[in-house]
Length: 105
Image 1 (tube, rainbow, N blue to C red):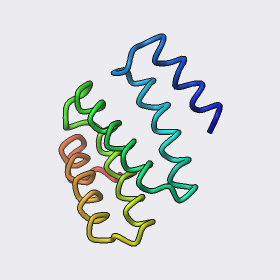
Image 2: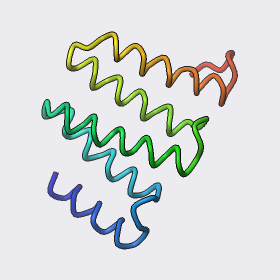
Image 3: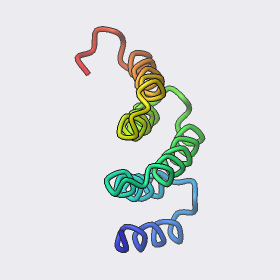
Image 4: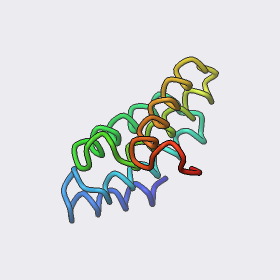
């Protein structure tokens, strides 16, 4: 986690807050939080990442869909399956818009 945070600091200095590399560095940290059971921290960071990705790419983007899936995974880890299903559904709807309904992913 220490190294991920150091990497995040470097990316922010190089690119500023709203950059794909910063979002990826935050994503790594959020996944560590989820693995550690720090679900509130993970969700907060995934929401921030989602906002950044929407700002950078618009709502209909694979990266945004992936972040919804990451949030769904956190909710599922918490046992909040209703919220997890909502997030999975949002991610799926975006992927269908990006690739069409017949795409294998």
